[in-house]
Length: 303
Length: 256
Ligand SMILES: Cc1cc2nc3c(=O)[nH]c(=O)nc-3n(C[C@H](O)[C@H](O)[C@H](O)COP(=O)(O)OP(=O)(O)OC[C@H]3O[C@@H](n4cnc5c(N)ncnc54)[C@H](O)[C@@H]3O)c2cc1C
Ligand SMILES: Cc1cc2nc3c(=O)[nH]c(=O)nc-3n(C[C@H](O)[C@H](O)[C@H](O)COP(=O)(O)O)c2cc1C
Ligand code: FES
Image 1 (cartoon, each protein chain N blue to C red):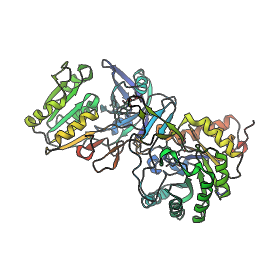
Image 2: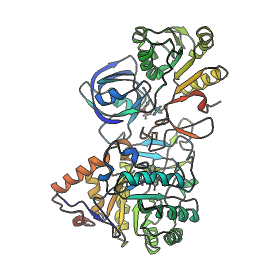
Image 3: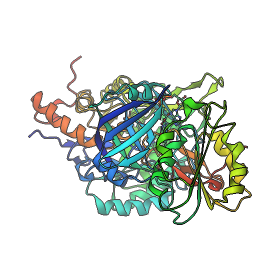
């Protein structure tokens, strides 16, 4: 059987499949559909210090092969999530990644420190790229200098690997990626959702209260794949690619452009057992294409 | 909760834009309670991407029945399915109307809001007095009257806005009189938001237990995406898919 394991430098995952933040709840919601131990790792829904109600409804709008969301990072605060993680840690051996959010740099560092101190948490993912919190979709990952400052600060507060999650809405994502690397990021993950606009023609207004919302799902795959390819060629640290993954073939495409591992998000909503199918497809495709290990094809796109 | 490949065994068109589907889903049918819903993948392709939520009209294992109105792309694809086709169905989802043994209950259904109440009526009509209040725009929006007529309901009142079926008028116009005459202990309602908001206003001063089944845009149907929220009376959000779809009427903040 093909070797599905992947090397992130600071740790090895048994396979490259990681459910994306905000699309996999707090993990246990998916245990009716799969053994969580089959996953390479899993990312929990983004967390702030305090509980947040999220944005007013409507929060979702379907687009062709995609999804616009304006959830606004609704969720419990850090205290409650710690209890959830203790539970989850006892239920699975799969590495748990906490998606860290903050309203300012200080909160990012504080939340990161809380979870980095938990033995159940394998690594952190710094969500500097959510488009649904500030009006206009502004986030730290749009600016390379802010990214540098923030990553440096957070790294100083933690002793666990840090993945920095980038935004496709930055003018120069490569510059932001380099900044994150220089500031000490152990890995990058990309992309978060693309800013989009939905219009209610009857009311002649935007559908969402925040005007703009984040687009995800198969519709964004070519755009996301391009950004992952560009960033992979310009950084030394591992890159976790995502955007529109729904199949084993999609996973191989991301690895081929240089990703070390992948995350899959929206597909979890339409198919809660997606991970099981994608994993089976990945093995089958590798067999069909006579790929013995993912390392063998990583970054081997011929252009 | 199961993600089951269901087999369509019967399709029935109920006049303009309304359809019934009988689907073989033994695992879901076995667990389903009146008021639960399912998420149906209407097409195996990636567009449309999301499953569509539908109430379970009735479950008689190994089958569930869906009753739906064609609204847009998803429901058009669904109506075009044939006997023998398979559909991925996630369910049963959400909570259900409470059991209130011995109590006299007024069931209030606006249009396809009949769905969660139909199963409740079928399961409970023989054990306790149920009064049905069912209304729609016209006869073309009111179905299953024969099936409802065959249930041992205490009483039923049908309303249509154009008078083409039952009494003429909005169902809310008959509410006051029915409550005075029947003195129910509780109400259970499902229908358009405007109707539910009107009910909330009318029932506010009455000493009854009131429950309502809600709809919202749903991404996942099982509590993980946080897209399906409604505003509660306390100003906080509730997720319709896993905290509902059934809520105490007074727990929801209604538009004024
Ligand atoms: C818990 C729950 C139970 C439901 N049960 C039933 C049922 O038993 N029978 C039935 O006919 N319908 C039911 N609905 C509504 C049904 O889900 C929508 O009509 C359907 O999703 C529309 O899909 P579409 O692709 O045809 O429409 P789209 O093309 O997506 O949209 C067309 C129009 O339909 C309306 N719509 C879309 N999604 C929803 C939604 N989730 N809720 C309400 N309106 C929507 C909007 O006004 C939209 O403009 C239920 C909804 C929920 C949340
Ligand atoms: C409903 C929803 C909620 C999300 N919440 C988060 C979040 O809390 N933190 C985060 O970093 N990304 C969040 N994302 C972004 C996803 O993790 C992912 O980057 C994006 O959806 C692209 O992947 P996909 O096309 O496979 O869905 C969310 C996406 C969706 C659709
Ligand atoms: S539909 Fe996803 S949380 Fe309710």
